[in-house]
Length: 308
Image (cartoon, helix red, strand yellow):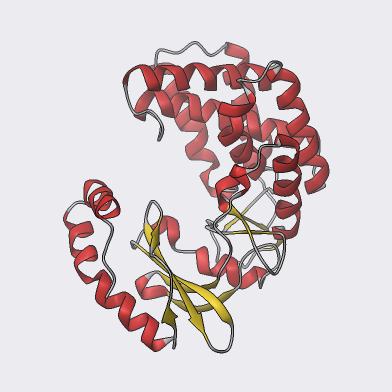
């Protein structure tokens, strides 16, 4: 039986309430049952992320694997479908799945993430190459990003009207235009949906492989905005943030074989949405107070650089 880490248990209960408590109570038995069913021997220490646990294991026919069990949530529903569609192309291989329990047996990657690399050029290039490899025809039953376009437009209107903010009129209008011009009609291409550098891991079969996809169908350039938003804290504290941002955009677009202007427009929309979200809800690295205010200022700076 596994021991559920205290930090993971506490955050799960804080987020999910009684449902989280009930899920945690059954988690050790569920992990034991899945390991036995899929004929795996656990090895190494248990790991955890925001919504699930990772159990390193070994299976005779495929070698090193991990058992991933997530709290049942709509945001995780299509993760195994994305892995199945990719079949190991740019992402870890899916060996087994139990959709009822949001569980998967996956190829084991290393613990080194792309976010640990010091070279921003390499981060943008690797992420772009991964994005290109993941851009395959999407199964018809996967959720379409374009179905969220109306909600994005309404949220932008509500945020710009209700929140006190320092974003320029041009910045907000540019975000609205991206929703109008790009979000309403998107290609039926499978994208990652959360392609930040922490979700790209060193691996043995290939140099880098993606993990933790959302499994959306949409514009591959959408993922560039997620990457740049999560790299903003580093890029914007360099001596020449404007040049660094342009370079990352250029390298990602070239590596992903995407139109550079399209990549930049999606990145600008993501930044505006993040600036408004931070004002309403805070950020993962700073929920309130001075930390939140500092991050809001950084994101606002990212918005204006991307709008220029």
